[in-house]
Image 1 (tube, rainbow, N blue to C red):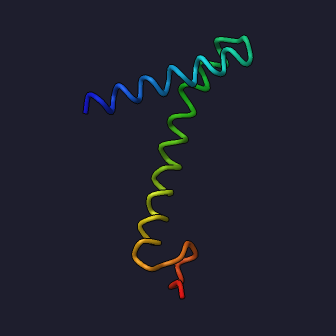
Image 2 (image 1 turned 90 degrees about the horizontal axis):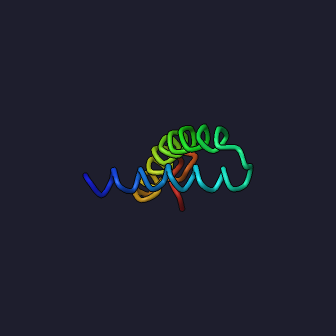
Length: 66
């Protein structure tokens, strides 16, 4: 679990530093660092659902693959 939290902290720090370097505005970097990981987490949830369905012989649309 410590590794997970460490990775999360690193992800937020990298997002902040990249956006701050690109924009020169620490507020935009901070907002991005807070929002992007949350959106990415939700996207990952759906990504996993799609891959699990695909692994069990279904397609993304819910029909069985030939």
